[in-house]
Length: 83
Image (tube, rainbow, N blue to C red; front, side):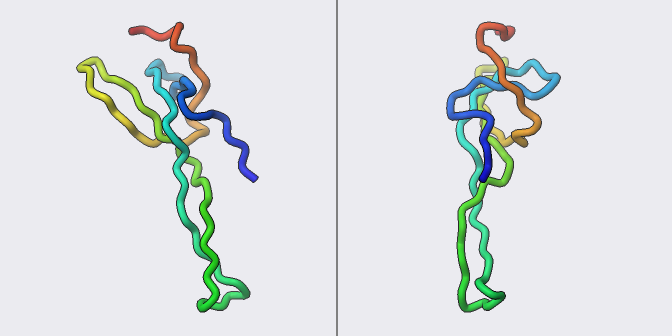
């Protein structure tokens, strides 16, 4: 079982960074395995791949959404950001 560090709309920043971002969603991918190695019995599961999609606004007021590795992010507070 995966333990997620953030939830939707949490404020985060890259470790050792200053750009304040909000978590949008965790990236989920479908993986296929085969029961007993039999290709006629595929099992499709949705799994978390380690990436978190985050959104922020640039200096030019452009909204950007980009994936980051969860391990590269840390919690942040919007009250301590430079706006």
